[in-house]
Image (tube, rainbow over all chains, first blue to last red; front, top):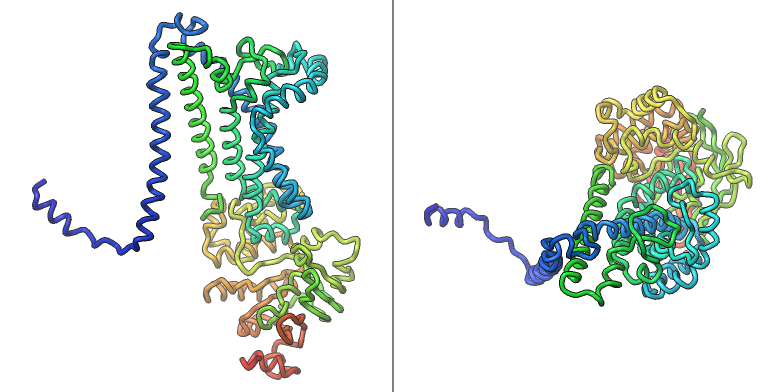
Length: 318
Length: 259
C-alpha cells in the first residue's frame, strides 16, 4: 500500500465523536481494570505452565508414586471432583430453597434475620469449618455411616467398611456444602427478588398458587443466576484447601465409596499438605496439579456459560 | 359462562390507607363495562379487587362483598386461586412469560389446572384461543418461538389468548391498550366486541373515546382530593354518560373541565 492510499484512508475516516473528559477517563479506567484481570490470569497461567514443565518432562519413575505426573494427578482430580460434586448436589437445592423462602414465603422480619445469618456463614474462616467438621460433624456422622453400611451397602456410595472416625469423603463434601451455601443462597436470593412483578402477577392472575407462580415466573427468570451462583460455589469447593485437609482422612486412590476411611485427597488439600516437605521436582509436580485444577475450573465455568447461553432467546433478556 | 358481578359496600385498603370507598355496582354479563376516571382514583385498584389480585400486594385488603353468581369472592372458605381461575385478567403492559414459547404461553393457564390433556386437544385449544385473540394468522408458523419476540400489540393479544384459553367467566382488562399504537388498539377493541358474546368484560381505560366505542356501561371514578379515597361517582349506560350524565363531576371530566 502506498503512502497516498494511507493518506486517503485517513481522510475518509469520520470525525471523532465528541466525548467529555469524564467519560473518557472512566472508559479508560474501566478498560484498564478489564485488561488487568486478563493480565493477572495470563500471569498465573504462565507461571503454572512454566513451573510445571519440569514435572511433565521428567521420567515417570522420578515422580512421587513412580508412575508419572498423570498417574499422580489422576486420583487427586477424582477426589477434588467428588468432594465438589457432593457439595454442589447438597448445597444447590438447599441454597435455592432458602432463597425462595426468604424472598417469597418468610415474613419480612424473619426473612431479614435469616438472610443476615446466612451471610454470616460466609464470614467464618475455612479453618474453623475444618475443625468443626473434624470435631463435631465427623463424630456425629459415624452412626449414620454404620447404618448406611448395614442397610444401603448395595449402593456403591455406601459400600463400606464404614469409617470409625467419620472423616470420610461424604463428611468433607458436607462441610464444603455448608461453606458454599451462603454464596449460592445469596446470589439466588438476589435474582429471585428481581423477578419482574409483571410476570409474577401474570402467573397469579391465571390462577397459579404461590409455588406455581414461582415455577412459572421466578425460577425460569432466576435460572441463569442460580447456575452462576452454583458455579461460584463450585469454584470455591474445587479450590477449598484447609477444611478438606483437616477433615478428610487420606489414604488410597479412586473409589466411589463415600463412607470409608480410605479416600483420595483433593488437589488443593494435597498441595497444602505436601508443599512444606517438597523440593525440586516435588514442587514442580504439585504446581502441575495446580495447573490441572486451574484448567478444570476454567472448563467448568465455560460449561456453565454454555448451559446458560444455550437458550438465550428464552431468557427474557430480549 | 358469562356471569353477573354484584359489588356491595366495597372498601379497599392499602394497609391503613383507604383507597376506594363504598362501591355499589352491578355488572351485566355478556357486555363490556368501562371504568374511567383520573389517575389515582382507584379504578385499577377496584378492578384488581374483582379477582382478588389486589391482596397480592403486602398489606392490601378489602371489606365488603363481591358476589359472582351467588358466590361471595371474599367468603372465608374461598381460595383466591380458584377465583383467579374463573376471572381472567389482562394487564396494562403486555406480559407474556419470556421463558416460554408462544404455544406454552397460551396453554400456561390450562396446564395449571392440572388437567391432563391430549396433545391434539392442546393443539386445538391453542389454535382456537389464538384465533379468538386474532393472532393465529400472524404466529401459526412460529408457535415454538419465544412470546417476547412479538411486537407489543401482538404480545397483548397473546396475553388475551392466554387469558381466554382457560375459559374464564369474566375478563378484566387494566388499560390493555395504553402501551399500544392506534392500529393495535383498534385490533384489541374489535376483539373486545367479539369476545363480549362469550365473556363479561370489565375494562379500565384512560381513553374516553375507547370507553365510548367499546362499552355498554360506564362507571366514573373520582376522588375529592389527594389522600381521600376514590369513589364510584356515577354508573350508567355509556350513551347516557357521554351525552347526558347525572353528575356534574362526570360531565366536567368527560368534557375536559375538571379540578
